[in-house]
Length: 182
Image (cartoon, rainbow, N blue to C red; front, side, top):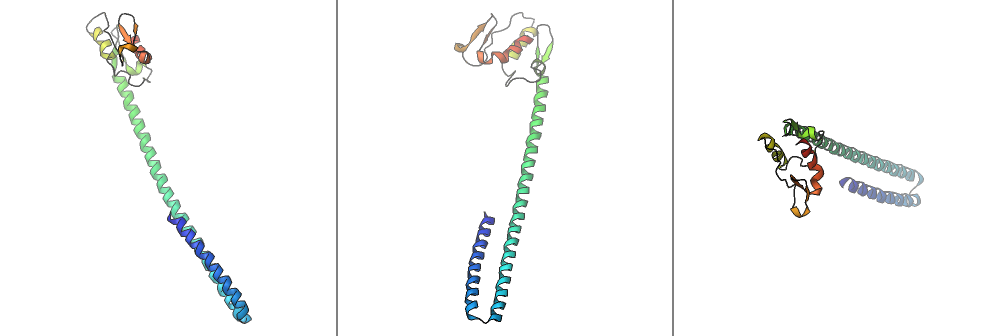
């Protein structure tokens, strides 16, 4: 990251400058008259203060730059989350609308929607099999027998229930509400 690189570089430069200032101080203390030594010490002190100020300014600059970048990222993430929530709400509304429009006819001639059958919480892929047409067709044509149904998979895994249907155990729970409406 550029900020870390700049900070490390500036700190290293400050460390080297401090070493040079200390060497100059020691040399000046031995070689210069007292007044000149005091003037040099003031100058070196000012250089040290300037360097410290520059380091603080650079740290402040990077702190602000990083804070602004983080705020932009947070804004983007909030916008993404808002769009996800909006999509989720629209999807749920559409799904409920479809559940209400997907209707089954029972033996008494009453129509029930998929949402009503499952209390507005149908299992995954409810109503996507042939059960709807197979359940509704006999009642539309005044037929008194239901056709054979196979819910996903092969018959080796099937269990036979009564004379009217074949169910596979893993989907039996999902299929039962359809049969209750029929």
